[in-house]
Length: 234
Image (tube, rainbow, N blue to C red):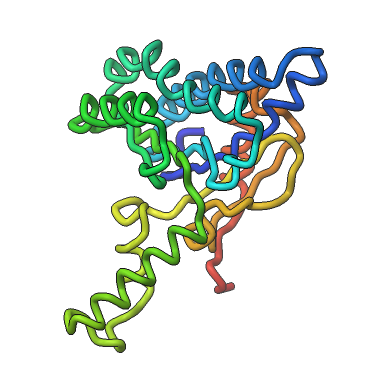
């Protein structure tokens, strides 16, 4: 297990609502249970030496959901960090967030920024929450920033390459994910890290996120370890 561990794992945490519905519970109960899974999987990733764990917590499209559900989802980071931050600090975890901060409620942003500030010097696992994140928006902003540099004479067109694009993305100082995990049986990327996942290994499971265990996580990692990554070669 400890050989060839993915440096960066990204997870689309899907199925909270369906997990709750199958149990006759409100969707919010599924989100609350899913929050507990975040803690378990973060610790499992840290234990095997994963360096970066990026979790798709809230997409730019999720605002379309009922207001009651959105309001609850915006409370979850605050609740999670209030309960778990001390233990994350004890385990040397560094909290980060990528996404559009401008639309987040003040209480959500305050909780996240406080966690980021308190863990900024930690040197262990980077726990990166994709919150109000959309990959197409991220890429458009990167392209506009590069165009501005060209317009202002700070860059030449022939200097634009993949490395420059990488630098302007929200993951600019992180390696691309080695492994993407998506729960709940859906087989799509849902506007998540489209540039960064170009050569990632993909692993899908029918298990809903609240029911996703450390054993499922280890199964995904072991499947990754059996694969041969050729990057277009032979």
